[in-house]
Image 1 (cartoon, rainbow, N blue to C red):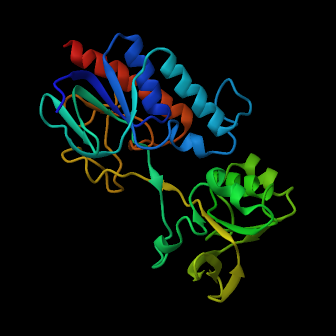
Image 2: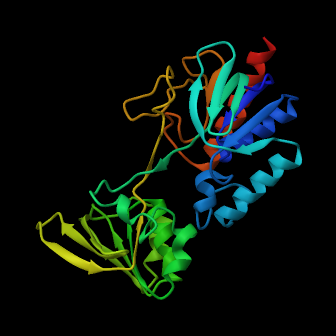
Length: 304
């Protein structure tokens, strides 16, 4: 175990974590940001961002890169390791990764949320073999092929629009008879000719050998099931928090970390920011706001 004790350990390098890192570093704090994947979180997997102030239109990966480069330019330390265990209740917080152990006077939890699964029996079997939860990551693999997107929110519509420029045909499957996405996105996808809506429907079966070859889709209105031949299935049915290992931190019934307006959790010296928090809105701009507040409160805490 390293004897170094950081002022703050930031868990996650999405918009909330990187913003927290920038604010902490500018305040003169000794910090480390721990991220298991790529910096930027979900932003880095978003095709296009059109609602972040200052950019009328920017790709998600470009925005994520700009945030990471900004943080790096002022000396924010980011380590790419996966957290396996934490002890947050003592005065000195302990964060264990698969590579080492970090000690801190305070912790800011910015893990975000993970993609929800379809929860079908053989879903795991086809992950990476036809099933993906990130269209911008894997879409290029399906050039001139047939794919399906499951979901009805902003991410699903954005994924379908993105894939329509790559795939020959895109099926957009949603359990309701209308989409939940922003009107601007719905207006955009209506203009695209190779996207077919499959509404009031859910995926009930995955078929294939080494790779997925087709899906069984049930119509909820008449209970009929039809088989759709596809080469790839992109799941965009929302995201959920992964908070099981945060022992002692209070979460709500859906698993999101409970906090007050100052990003304080029930444990002294432990703060939270971004999509993992029980917030009414999960957007890039609110995650950044949360990160700035959490960093400010962490600074005030260690100065006491």
